[in-house]
Amino acid sequence: MKATRRDFIKTSAVAGAGFLVSSGNFRKQARASALQDVAVAGIGVGGKGGGDITQAGYYGKVVALCDVDYNTLESKKKEFPDAKTFVDYRELFDQMGDKFDAATISTPDHMHSIITSAAIKLGKHVYTQKPLTRTIYEARLLGELAKKYGVCTQMGNQGSVEDDLRKTAAQYRAGVVGEVSEVHVWTNRPIWPQGKDRTMTLDKFIEQTNASDDDPEVKEELIAEKKKQIEEALKRVDWDAWLGVAPKRDFWPGVYHSFAWRGWWDFGTGALGDMACHNVNMIFKGVDLRNPTSVVATSSGHDFDSFPASSTTTFEFPANDWRGPIKFVWYDASQVPPSELTGKYGFEHVDGGGGCFVVGSKGAGLGGDFRAEGGKRLDRIPEDQTEFVIAPIDEKGNGGDARHKYEWFTAIWEGKPEICWSNFPNHAGPLTETILLGNLSIWTAADGQGEKVEWDAKNLKVTNLDQLKTPGVADLVKPVYQNGYDPIDEL
Image 1 (spheres, rainbow, N blue to C red):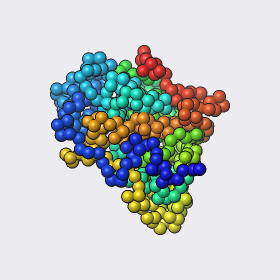
Image 2 (image 1 turned 90 degrees about the vertical axis):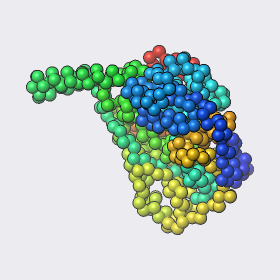
Image 3 (image 1 turned 60 degrees about the vertical axis):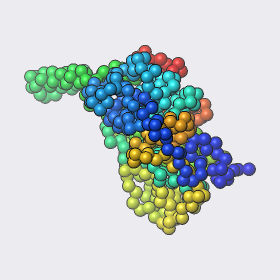
């Protein structure tokens, strides 16, 4: 007999992941005397990584900093003058492997797995930025390693600690809109360049410059100026270390480092990988959006080097032991669900910046706003009839992203990896696997319409791979590391 939603809430194995505990509870405060016990290394300390290691420093002692950008490293060193600095994470691990307990890892996506797995194998607790990995196999691997080594892990989707997010997830799980059949999630990303014909090299620049109508002297000046710009930039960045496991390519100022790497297949995961770990996070927990069976996408087109400027991706999830099948549609580039669908429930104006719209048998929800057909608001299920855990509360008053670090540190202090909402085995790994499946079909959508990819989630296999016309799909399931780095199976 099919289990009811209430039965599932009471008996589900995800209770061990820190979700299904009596309503409103939160973990006890950590020992005040432990606040400086944890020695932390920061790997990738610019941009978001800069905030990550700063916040980790609220609760632990920062003993090491690592970044391939010398300017970034020098700047962060001023904040943590006692920390030792490194450009290559391998040197950090070799020299200080016994001198730190935990690490924040906030590099471009393509380096997440190899650095995180090495840290876990040293017995280190890890906070790795979203998306957890660049490929599906890597996400599964990190979850398995975290479980094997018993370390405390957290992925950097910081909205996870917000009380409203957890309560809203519990509402959907408890059936506030009834049996969920559709989920629509969207974002305004990419806000970085994506699209065709973006690759630039010095040879290409010289060819284009020489083909222009400029005077010969002007051409020479332009080429000399560009060469000098590249030379000066490479004095500040270890380009080989930045490339890491990715295929070799020429450096070009501003196109990859330090932010635009997200739009390249070799380094990032596009808008889907970047933002779905945030925007899908709540409903992933709410209705258990894991183990999809197929995905198909449309896009504005791409050249297998840079992601498309826009895409729409549809996933199919089978019924499980407590809910029916679900269709999940992802939209990026400020695309939104059809107005005739959202308007049916009184949501006339949907913000293109990002959101989550859920359709059920009793009505629909836009985030935490639940309505029946026609727009009448649905009553929330009383919280004492739902089950959720409030994130640990920092007695210092730090909230938001810092609270996410505090949850991670609380898990470390108490020796309970399950305290972290976005721990790798139970949440971050499966969430990343689900999300990154979409990129397999986006890859096949180079001319606009993607091929339908059939998926065996248990075995991480494309079951119709032989029928796909687009080559290279398997490399987005399991990568081949370049430049002398150990193969992923040997990590």
